[in-house]
Amino acid sequence: MSTLDRPSLGISLRLLSGLLMAGMFVSVKAVSDAVPLGQIVFFRSFFAILPLVIFLWVRGEFPGGLATNRPGAHLLRASFGALALFASFAAVARLNQAEAILISQLSPILMALGAAVILSERLTKWRIWGLALGFSGVVVLVWPELTRSSDHDARLFGYAIGFAAAVLTALALIMVRSLNRTESPGAIAMYFVLASMVGGLATLPWGWEMPSVPVLGLLVLSGLYGGFGHIAMTLAFRYTEASRLAPFEYVALLWPILADLFIFQLSLSPAFLIAAPIILTGAFIAAAERTR
Image 1 (cartoon, rainbow, N blue to C red):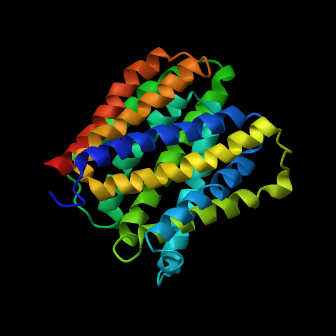
Image 2 (cartoon, rainbow, N blue to C red; image 1 turned 60 degrees about the vertical axis):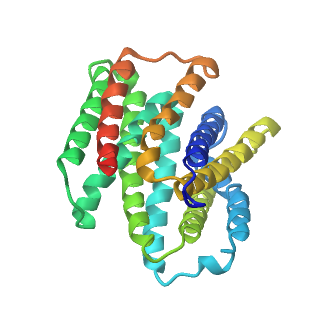
């Protein structure tokens, strides 16, 4: 076993990353009625810079590791990522956390399809089955809202935004895969955070709110949780193969479910209970291909 092949540490870091990301979404949902979306994105991005800079400095990649010969590709990846961040936070504000995170599980399936089209990667039967099951699960999840009155338009809009976030995340991940061939992970992460911060700041003319102390604390926590969660995920893939970590990707859905039930006092809909295993099975099939 090499010094970098430490599966127990990698799995622990992946579980920690999921918990930290759940903390970020809990913080975001808690303040979504108090401050505008752009302000949330700005604070999340601004306070994520500190842990990221510390991480890069420890690895000897700051500031030298931020140099790049592909600024256009970084701009495209960062733009997709920033838009995905806006969309995912908007979805969390309108849906239960568990529903928003469940829809985000479409991202790796959509990435596999997009990589086949954009990067000329193979489109295997595993990816096709994963995509089919993923979309079937989303139809099951959304169908009850389509058959109800206009009172449920806000939730239906939340589902649409959540799906858009999954598409944008998949595009961002495809760009990450392309950039990883020549660029450092630190540079990729830093430019994404900076683009999100600029995007959030651009919404200032539309009005920001002066946050109370508790709200400000949650905004700061959203950035710290997100920054440290990203670092934990990066280290997890450093110490453990992606195929070994794949099943633990879906444990991350447990934390939003617990948050909905015990923090926000929200119940799980019957449609969610049916859709969750369908979507997760599709994602697992797509991931299992890497193991094979």
